[in-house]
Each structure stands twice: as structure tokens, then as C-alpha cells.
Length: 458
Image 1 (tube, helix red, strand yellow):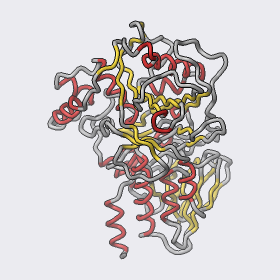
Image 2: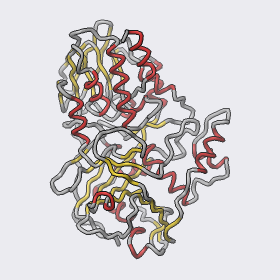
Image 3: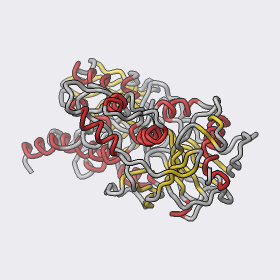
Image 4: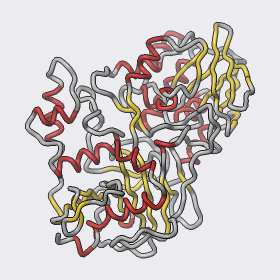
């Protein structure tokens, strides 16, 4: 392949800034915890163990996924992926125009960044990759056959970034605290998957018919004909739908668990992928996939990069320890949230176009809580549960000290294990991450009351 072909191929690829991170503070990642004591009192029995994420408060992440704000063009993501002076490259989901906010986008962005590098690097060069998540590991894998030296710097004490499979002896499956759900047609082969194909939508009055995406599709089509972009919520209202109507609100809460943002913040011109009737969930150890992709690249953990200085002769990195080291080129795969908070200083500053793109996009929030039971308290084989409305049981309101968890994954029918996974998105996810352990568990158990067998008939 000629240099020109490589450059053309790179321009057609997906690009980005994903789930691995750096920050000037070498603060350790918050450790997932088991069920606290004493346990909150609810109608739902306490689990034998629980684990949860806290990406919103993680200094190496500052959020879960990027989203497109109102009025922002999709080309903004491509701008972020443009190399700076042939020395600083970017990779990860945040600049993948086709698959933003997804694991597929992270992988594709790493492939694209590696292709750009292959068209530029010379034998013997030293390449630094900042971040050992999917994007960074893909860059390392795609450069493995070149005569270059690749060093991967990871701020955490583990690989994977926002892919986080927590393997514990007392849990029957790896606990997926990061990305693990994909569409039914997603061919991203990371680990063994199970199909999540049956949904249960339940309100205080009982089960209801699953809502379709028709209202969302109509609103988006109408908004895309307008002279200016509006929020998804505004588009729904303009087409006669009420975003506060309980069933539609539940559908929007489900959308927030993948987009990371509420309908009031999402662009109607460039909306996220709409909820799917069938999904897949990875149940294997995703960390093993990342480790395999890193291959023989030199890996340095617990090493946040705080400063990148670059010029025509190369790149100098400063670590959180104060140590500096030099390379010919660098690939930055830290998440958008860290870059927006200036977790890395660039000298000279990034071009205005890059800084503008960084500030234009939004960083969204998605949080997860896993519950393990010795015996199930539920009696449904539905694999995806949705809470409709704010009422619980006999019509009481959700407690003021809880955050509603409106989407649940029931893994019992597809794995044989008594595991429930609660997922929260948008503003509620940011609040959920700030809860103490007991408060998070209380929120989860309170939200599950609609799925007690006694609540099945309303």
C-alpha cells in the first residue's frame, strides 16, 4: 500500500478520545465495594453482595461517554482526531462520528490513528500511547508489526479504562462496571455474550405495553427539517409528545443509559442511537481482551501524564511523579472529560480548532450497580426491566433521599445466576455516583419494589 492510499484510508476511518484516562492527580480509582452494613430497610430483600461504578467522580474519567450537544456538528468529532504537527495524535470514541460513545467507536478510532501513524513513522521511532483502554490497546496492536518502540502509559493501576471487568471469587461472573452492552447486530467480538431480548415495562398499576420509538423518530425527522438544531425534548414537544408522560419518560431514561445525557441536552439533529428491542451483554473478562491487544508493548501503570510538550523535533511527556521522558510521537486516548478539565497541559496549547471541539462536545454520565442474590425474589424471565412512573407499590412516591434506577438487566434467565444489574444515565447517574454506598443501595432496592411478585398485579 502506498503512502497516499494509507492517508486516504485513514481519512475515511473513525477517530476519537475514549475510556482511558490521565490526570495530574495520581489519585487511585475508587474501589468497587460490597454490600455495606447496616443495610437499608426496604420491601426488597438485601442482596448477598453488591458492586457499583462511580465514573462521574473518577478523576481519570470524569464521565462515561461523550454526547453531541445542541447545535454541534458531527464534524466536530473529526476535528478532534486531526493530528497536530504530525506529533500529537488522538484516538477514542469522542471523535468517532459514526459510533460515538461506544466500544466499537473506541476500537475503530484506534485503528484509524494507527493507520495515520503507519503513513508517517519511520523505523526506530519511539511512540507513546497515553491510556491502556480499548483505543490505546488497539493502537498498540496495530503497530506491533512495525519497527517502532511503543510505550503505553496508564494512569490507573489496571488496564481497560472504562472497560472494567471486576473478577471476584464470590461472584459467578465478571462484574462489568464499565461498558458491556451492545446492539444485537454489533460484531465487536470482545468476549462471550448473552442475548437480552425480552423486556418488561412496569408501572405501579402493573405491566404495560412496551413503548415504540415512533415518537422519537417522528420528533427527530421534524427537527432535522428546521433551520436550527433543538434539543430532543423540544423536538418531542413540538410534535405533540410529552417528555414528562410516564411511559415516554421511561423510554428517555433508557436512552440516557446509553447516551449519557437527558433529552434536554441531546441534539435532535445528531441524536444518539435509539433504544433497541434486543441487545447483547458481554459476560467474559473484557480486561483479558485489552491485555491481549497490548501485546509486547511496554506498559507503565499508575503513571498519569500531566503535560505534553511538542515541536518539530518530537514530544516530551511529564508524568505525575515529575519525571519527564521523550518520544517521537504521542497518541492521546484519555476521555473527553479529562481533557475538558485540562487534566493534561499541552505546550504549546492545542490549536484553536481542537480546543473549540473539546469544549463543544458534552461528557455524559452512566453508572451501574450489580446485585448478587443467593435466591431470587423475582419471578419473571424478562431480561430487561423498566420502571415507569415515580410511584412505587401502592402509589407512594420515590423517597427524596434516593435516585431512581429505572433500567435493570436480569441475568438469571440467560446465565443461570441470580444477578441483577441496575443502570442509570444522565443527570441521575451523576447524582448516583455521588451517593454513599448505603444511599446507592437504598436507591437500587427502592427502585426494584415494582418487580416484587406482590406488585405484579398493581
